[in-house]
Image 1: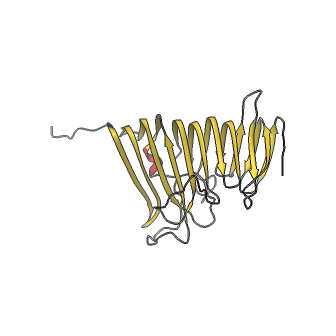
Image 2: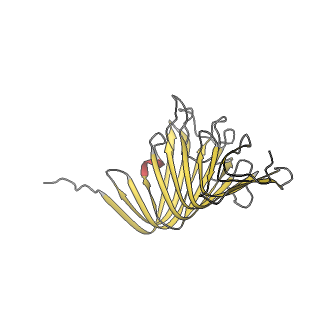
Image 3: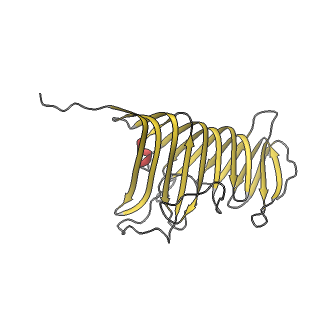
Length: 253
């Protein structure tokens, strides 16, 4: 009858390359790329899943007063020419994983949609501020406000702003041998969650064990003290540490 067939499902393997850019007007506000071994995508829903491991990285433009950290591209003023981004700066995030990934393709081009992406097996996240959307963060020379997060699995959820005009943000849950390192602290726990809207890490460990956080002087490069507890919350921006359950050892405020 001359009707073109509808392609519902696409499967690719042996090295799949992903590239996407996000604009508001003609202003580039987000850039994404990645490489995975095998990818299957449902054209009707946008759901995608991969196996064999890989990596994904993104750059998002900062508007000068938004917090840095994990997440999708943020909204900013539209109808402006594309520039180098040197004044506003960018946040770089790279996620490497050895196992499967499940998510939705809309996470690459629609920051206002609620999307959860799950990464499995030896997940490593590296993030931090950069000047241009082609620079990367060296995990062995972390910049101020940069960091790494390692775990067995990572569940990252993209969320729209909580109030009118608020920027999109993410929450994430790192489970299994979770370890976090920042420019002025490090920690480990069974689970580490992060709420970008609050800039707060929450560390939890099972019964009979404790999570740990080491805080160190940014200028001297030395650990400033260790705190252990079954449940803690830490804000790396304000340096506030809240102990919710368990005991503390060698704590330093």
